[in-house]
Image (tube, rainbow, N blue to C red; front, side, top):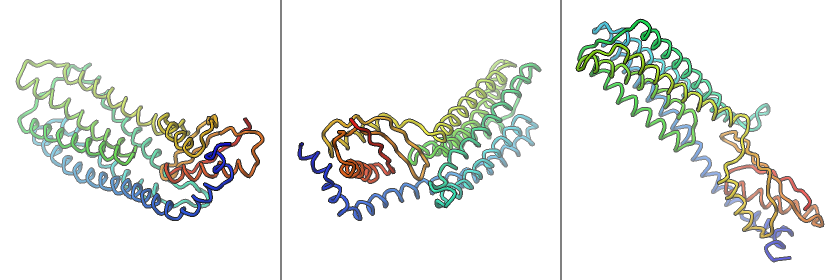
Length: 323
């Protein structure tokens, strides 16, 4: 029996780990706490910025629509206002996701993030459907778009501002692994895309020959793009709610860390990850020699579980099988 295996099996490493657990726990708790706070602050910041910017854009678009008599520009203004409503929901969901675990919900309330994302994707789907129906109606009625210079300026500014806001939401979403922010980013982009359609129609009819079907066809393509974004967001959220297979990269890292502690092949398999956002549960199976005592097997599994908790911020449960 090699020294690495002997130490792990007899629990000596486990005792050493236990002696330093206060340092490890404090260190990793500090990191985990910072991650949670960063995610919460990012979500609130993005939501507040979105509400303010969208409210201002709504006022400008609505004013321009009334001055120019453009029904499409007024409709685009109301689409912008809908972004503010979902951003209010983004802010409100922070209170739900950060609630502490209780007796009925021992794993916390982090999955409200997925539920909120499903709601936003549903709203995106409605917007895409409405966008598609309006585009089809325009195509059937052979409606063309005629706008003035004011409409060009307002629409161009709206496109730039909304795309910047979308990129900011995507950036915060990637940085904090927050699916709500990514979903809200796509909502901002859907508004930007609708404004692009309006602007293209304006430019074509003002500076080139009038193509009556251009506005409606571009509207259909934008609607399909929004539908796809809504589907991807909903699929990701539902997948996390149902429980998903850990990524192979994570599995490889865990196996590599275990091999440092125990060199023999444990035939590690059957990984499952339950993602509660603020808390993650990992389960997997290992195979040990059938002659190993229950105590040594338990000590070995405890060493692995402690290591996973400290290095990967996950609570692990390991099932032991005889080899």
